[in-house]
Image 1 (cartoon, one colour):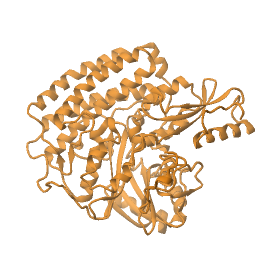
Image 2: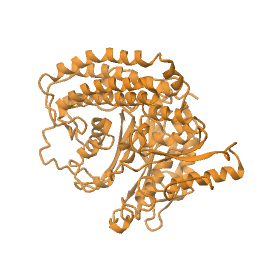
Image 3: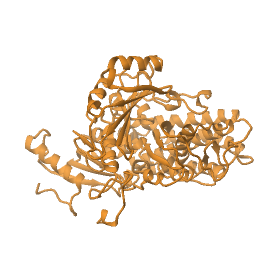
Image 4: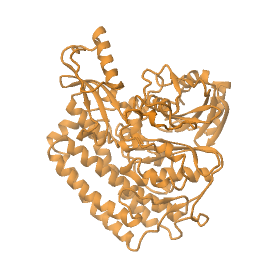
Length: 164
Length: 401
């Protein structure tokens, strides 16, 4: 395997058009954010299908997961997936809305091994449960930590960390 | 598991390691695991992990069967702190994430905020940024090479002395610019804090003349050393598929022959105007990761030399920003990435239009690179694990944030 970065020369608008044709309504509000970045919203239930399809695209596959971030919008949570395509040297940012009372999202760490720890971090800090994740433990905080500190309504109490 | 001893109640990582051993024993997919399997905590206070990295290692004699990295010992809530500080107040805190490359981290954060707020830094400031960032890259690679070789063999201790001696010179230059040696607090939105002091450019050129023979000296010290070669060539091979799967970036990716360098693939600042090579390795082994860092220091010298020659006159900050530097970017989200000494250092900021970042997330290169360890270390001897982890150049401050 040899990787040639940017081997497929494709204007970002054409790339967006091709993705729109291939994935259709799964990529809602698909738009160009930067000269090398597309942004789209994805339904929570379709995330895995979309990720698998993006990874399996011929020639222009988004083969690497750059990072996963979780954001607390108070009304809802959001996970942001940043995927990178070596062939076209471009990124796509997927925004997935997650119910705050039942924060469950499908994992993509079997498709993209790099997403593993980012998902664990999102669970640790924001309390997003990733369905199907093989090892969803806390990553930065201790095992017995109570609560998810990056939530906007998190209150740090002494009894939250009994062994300190 | 009567033969597993732990001094304290096992935490979740050790329990996981024990479960995996049990599962492997019942289906016996790992040959010989029943005999003499030991679970060892390597770290968090292990001298060869360069920080508080802990690896829960399942050993079969000398051979590693399983690795579970445990991180978080240096967690300082950087992302939470951002939400309680103005954009400006947060700059000194960014230094402390990946503290071996403070300048580059500051740049990443400042660039993201500039992009969010639509601030264009002055041209002189852009060149100063490139110069200090490349000096920082040299200092960072010197730490990486020095400590890595020191781990390998007794001869390496000498290497650490040489590299740290020269790193002092770089830090002196950065100190004269910013006032700090590790924690700089030098970048500002739209520029940098101070202009270069009188005579600094000459001192920097002196360093550029002084340093190349020192690189040759490092190479003479270890490159032909039989012990060094035995311990590095062919060890810990990172394939290009691994690089893609685990989103490895920086010198570690380039050592495997993947020409991913954000200064080229996603150009920023004035890098498009500067001439430099992207240094590549062939095999992706420990030796290549060492050699790529040596080569990159030479390229950094080239970049600095060009930037000094092209350095324009003018202000180093945009005039519109005055203390107390309160800026309120419009609502929106922004991700910028840049090439740190260890790889892609990304900053993702969500703004709600107030004076404080609504959410800030760092994509730290070491955090991502560390994920490949279980795959990389499986089946190697524990002594090689030290060489491999040294060659990956981890900084725990960045990983734990």
